Length: 124
Image (cartoon, rainbow, N blue to C red; front, side, top):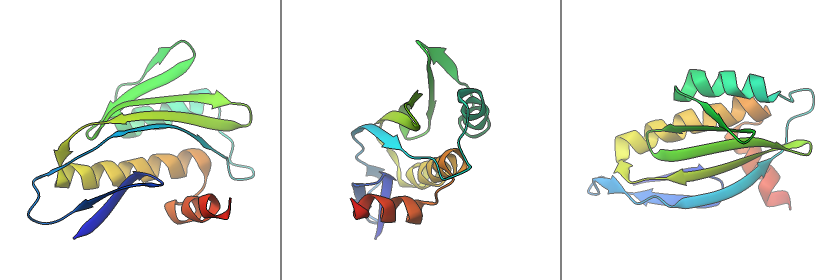
């Protein structure tokens, strides 16, 4: 049995017998940048293109999708980055790949690993 979390605080338990994972709208989250790691919107767009493929701009927000993430919307919010996601039902192997790429995206944008983000969230 494995636990997958596409966003801190939203875990989905998957067993070998389950073919699909139920996924939910995870909502908007604000992420801090690690000191000295702040990215411009253009820099974030390049990372999104590399990891997710097609990226478009809508009203100053970057929008994309990737496997289990039906919609990924990113925009600057003060000195942080706001990310709103909507996920969809996918097979467990796609969910695992989505999680790996999602964590890579957040690491490259914020400078924090998944472990560091979790620790940071539990401090508050």
